[in-house]
Structure formats: structure tokens, C-alpha cells
Length: 462
Image (tube, rainbow, N blue to C red):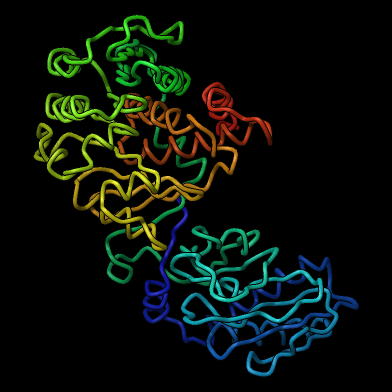
């Protein structure tokens, strides 16, 4: 996992450093200068323009400029206050105007077509949320120090930061006495491989069993996508129940167990104990009877539950009460993973997530006691204790009907495989995104993502 620190946490880390600030600036400037040389392909005959602000970020830029000048680069340094509207001809512009703690509105000068290297974060991007204030200059690379910042992986930040390089300048970013107990990390391929247990030589299908309760008359596709994804993500056995539909379309390998619309929740109390995870909600319908049965099912089983789509709507009037009614396992309610998009988040909380999506997901997880997976270009997975995992895999190809159903089945399969619910949620989102990246740029549909899950897993293995 890659550590992500807020601007205030990073300030605390800087303040706790054993080395003088001049030493840290020197190390940071060295990393910026090396990146500049790499981007320009050398120093001979090269021209660099630096825009430097009043804080440490500006000092990083000024010292980097001096280092480059010693290597023969023609360097011009402009203070933010007197920088021209259009910067002079250059092989590279270094944006050292403002860092992650900037508040206000800033318009970067016209770079006249030159590539931009940003110091810590593109100036005008919020270090906390990635929101844009003014007109930042899009960078082809950003050198940030010690740890990632939320603004580099959230909101508009990634589209302005370009390639992000984390430079180690000798700071301890994992000291909980300084940064606090609740951590935030970006998920990598290696994390997913470490979190999902491998199959044992004596495994059998029931050790990885998933029960999907989804779909309704006219909405059977959601159930099929969810159950297909569970199989493709590694479930050894999938039972599919579509209330009110006796013979729904289903993967050949799934076992269909029919149920009336008015009694499917009773099956949970009698037979759910054999399953590693239960997925409830995609396409289930939103009538009052369905909502009552979702809540009854949550209270009837102590198995981990992934709740999505219409399952979330079923508890929207009182999500905390519904989840606190779950059977107690190890002194806490049985684990639940909620997977809302922004509209469903607003339905559960009464307000949209807002710019600080990490804080929003943390708050919902804390009040409900559930793992919350807040969908978006950067997926935020929060635990009730405040720990957060961020997922950046996938892209706009996932913005198509049914991909959320695929994600639900994927997460359920990983929980059934033995992964902790929070890790299964983050790993499932990461694998789901990687599967989408294997598909066509146009015309990708949700079933393509489900079918690509085994290849995505193979890619993680290298």
C-alpha cells in the first residue's frame, strides 16, 4: 500500500522531522532537479522556467533551479507575485508556486506549450480533495514528497498531476503518534495478491460459496451479472435466488433456488450458514415488501453481506438501525459491505458526499458500523475505525449499466475466499477496474467486465 497523507498530517510530519528544514528542502529540490533532467533528456542547451511561491514549495523550486544551473541549464526564476502572463520559451516549466496547503484561487501563467513539472502538487489543486481553484497548469509529472496527498488521487487532481512520483526525503510517514491512528493508503496490485488467500490443495466448493439474492421480474439481468462475476472472481459455488422468478437466466454453473417474493428472507435463517458471503440487492426492486424482507434477511444471518443497489434503498430510512440489528459476531454486528454510488450515498445520509469523499465515507462507516465502498473515479473504501483504502484502477469505461452488479459479485467472492471484508471490497474494486482496462475503448458492457476477471487476476500475477 502507498501511504496517503493530508496536508495537515504532512505538516505534522515535517514538524516532527529530526533534520533541519534546510536539509529537507535540499533533498526535495534534488528530486525535482533529477526529474527535470530526466524529462528534458539532458542539460546541454536546455532552458527551464521556474515559478516559485513564498513558502517551502517555492524554496524547493528555487534550490532546484540553482542545482540545474550548476549543471549548465539556462534557468529563469519568477516569483509568483511578478511572473509574466506568458512565460518565456522553455524546454520545461517547473510549477513551484503553491503546495498542498494552499487556500485561495490561483491562475498559473501561460506556459506557451512547454511541458510542466509540478512540485508536490499542481498549484491551484486542493491538496485535500483534488478540487480546482482557478486555472492550474496540467503537468506531465508531479514530484511529491514522502507520501501521496489526497489531492493527487481524488477529484480533478489526477488529470492535472500527470505521472506522480513519490520522492523519499527521509521522513517517517507511518508514525501514528504524529499522523494519527486512522490511516489512508492507495491499493496496489501486490496488495490484492497478498489479501486474497490462495486455494488450498484440499479445498472444496463450499469453502468459497456465495449466495446471490438479486433480480426481480423484468430485472433478471442484474442477478445474472452478479452471479457470473462471483464465479469469475473465484467462488466455488454460487446459489442464485431471484424472488418471484422460478427459472431466471443464470450462469450454467450457478445453482438456482427459487423463492416467492414474500418469503425469501426466511431462507436466510435456515440455510445461509453454509455460505462464505451473501450478496443482496442488485435489481431486487424497491416496493415496501421487498424493503422489509431485506431488513429481515440482514437480521437473520450472521454471514458477511454485500449490500448494493435496491438493497441499499431498503435500509435508506434507517441504515444504522438496520445494520445494528445484525447478529453479533465477536462482540460486533456481523460484517456488512455497503457499495453506494453518489446518489445512493445521498439516499443513505441525506446529503451528497461533497468534495471530501474520504471524510464522507469515513462518517458513514462510523455511524453504521459497516465497511463503506463509495464508488467513483477514485473508489474510497472506509472502515468504521477510520482506516481508508483508495482504488484508482479502471476508467470511464466502467460508466455503463450493470458494472456495479459485477462489482458486488466480485467482492462477495473475495470475502467467501477468506479475505477480510474491507480488503475484499478494495481488492474487488481494484480487480474490477483492471478487468475493465482489458476491454475495448468503446462498446464495453458489464458482461465483458465479468468475463475478463480471470484475465485481470492473471495480469496481477504477472
